[in-house]
Image 1 (cartoon, rainbow, N blue to C red):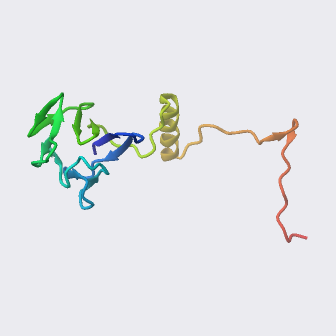
Image 2: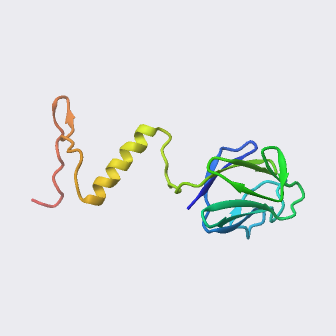
Image 3: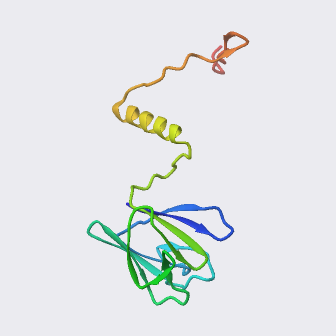
Length: 146
């Protein structure tokens, strides 16, 4: 399912999965995508998927929903496209949401390989036992054995 990168004024950007094909975004607690921004209306806009296409639709908000600097009532979104509402910028991504996506692309590639190996029941790397001062690390004996 698609996701948004939310860059709120003065806060660290975060990623939020779009849980369904029709969700409401706003500052009301009941919205599926809740954003703490006083310039957002309680029910500010709606994200809707029709077939393979996603749309952002303004819900008669006070401050409007903006795409490419123009206020919109309803606008199709493509992958990587931005829209603004309140003091926030939202970057839409049509790709599948990854929960803990690493920043480093090499680390992401490594995690994909490891996940594929785990799913296939394979072992990719057999780590040698750790050493302490050039000798194998002693293994503690279980308690109560003698």
